[in-house]
Amino acid sequence: MDTPPTAETLPPELPPETQRIDQSQEFRTLRSSFRGFAFPVTAGFVLWYLLYVLLSCYASDFMATKLFGHINVALVLGLLQFASTFAIAAWYSRFAARRLDPPAADIRGQYAPTALVAPREAGE
Image 1 (cartoon, rainbow, N blue to C red):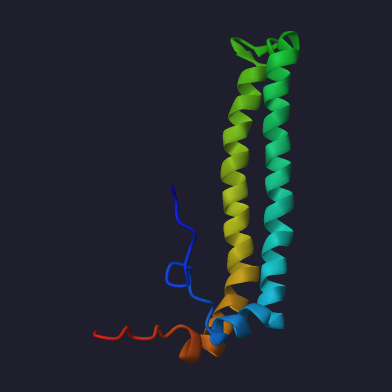
Image 2: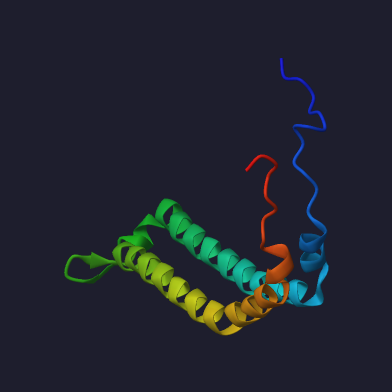
C-alpha cells in the first residue's frame, strides 16, 4: 500500500523568481495569447475530424459519391484531413514566430539573470 507523501517527497515550492514570472502581466498576456490561438484551433480541428468520422459512419452513401474516376468524397475529405493538419502546423509556426516568441524572449531576458540559474545542490 502506498504511504502518504511526506515533506521530503513533495515537490519543492516554486522559487520566488518563478512565482514573480508567473504572476507578471507580461507572462499572463503571453499565456493568454497562446491560449487564444491554441484552444479555438484545436477545437475547430477536433470538430472537423469528428465530422469526417460521423459522415463516414452515418452518411456512407454521401461519402461513397464518386467525384471523378475512382475518387469519392471520403477520399477527398480524408486527404483534406492531412492537408489541414499541415496547414495548422504552418499557421501555428507563423503565429508563434510573430506573436509568442518576441514576448517570450523579452520575459526570458528580463528574468534570466535570476530565475534561469539553477541553484547548486550541496555536495556538487
